[in-house]
Image 1 (cartoon, rainbow, N blue to C red):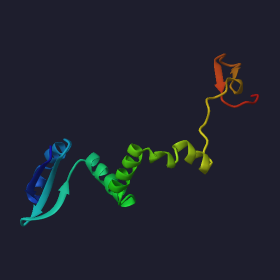
Image 2 (image 1 turned 90 degrees about the vertical axis):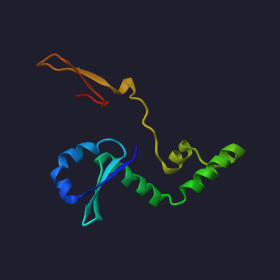
Image 3 (image 1 turned 45 degrees about the vertical axis):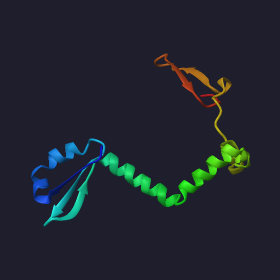
Image 4 (image 1 turned 60 degrees about the horizontal axis):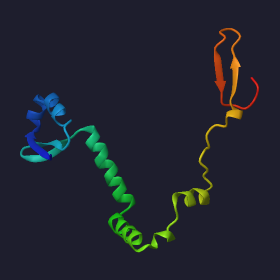
Length: 126
């Protein structure tokens, strides 16, 4: 649903709370006019953030359609193996995924004042 409503700013001012509620539905936005000329737009904050993020991706990856088409072709033709995997990149850049906590490194202590069991992830004495 993509609903655009154009209204004068003076009318919008009278109905701003109703308008703010209506734009919470996906695809609904209002264009405000002054003397018949567009002056502003109101949409939900969620849609604004989504639109802003999309524009940022487009700026960062201007040839995204071409890049995706090349990757699809590489996968179809079996040429994808020339591309590094995520694990390859992590290793190249020195990133290591944290392993699960080793139970030997977790110690339990009993509090003398409350006698509740406390667990620490540090391997040392308390």
